[in-house]
Length: 303
Ligand SMILES: [Zn+2]
Ligand SMILES: [Zn+2]
Image (cartoon, rainbow, N blue to C red; front, top):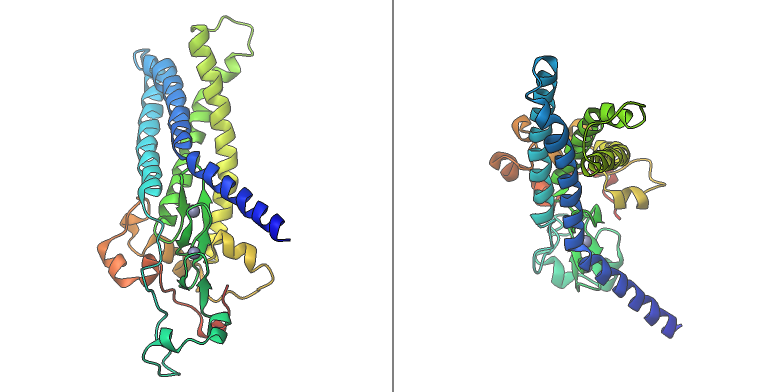
């Protein structure tokens, strides 16, 4: 028993170390896909079409403006997810004082029985109390506030402080890959026609590769985006959705509008950019990741 447990722990450790070292490779992979796509769309196909004149110039201009604007938003969101701390538990964090019990210092009064209660959870690995909706990430090796999942593509955990940025990254990736797929479609169909195709073997191969990659990303990101839209609508993280399968009523579900605002903020000007207004950050505790408004009648529910 003891030995198999040790072997399993070693395997998990090796797996987590492998995921961590995969980090920079994944960033290079993302930048590589963007590079191939840029070469196919801008350098090979639509850049040269700018001088064709007539409708071709107009279409090329439209594609290039769309492509570059979406690329800026995509990269901005991507590096915001990569570089933003998803949210850790502040040192010596303690739960809010329970007014009914009238305690002065909740931590010193906590009995082992309290720690076992569903309301107050304790992380044995970090040796600290866990705020609501917080989970321990074995890849990061620490507790993450409102952890959604550990994402290898962004080499970071997705949690309370960068979830919006992650959703925007999905959103702009879907739009960009769709624009690229549609704009390269006529060139892709051209491969299967009988006529002579202009271009060197290198440029033709890049166009083919860029089309296939972007189509694959557009389809898979669309599925992921639809899943996350429904999660935001129900104020649930991926982990919570997995854990609360049998719970029909969810204590954090305050209605679609409020659930959306808890992730995106209330200021419409900030909905499409990876940032929050100062006012929202001041007024909404949910954006700091430690406290979440909930339905009082369902307060006993906790995971
Ligand atoms: Zn932990
Ligand atoms: Zn993590």
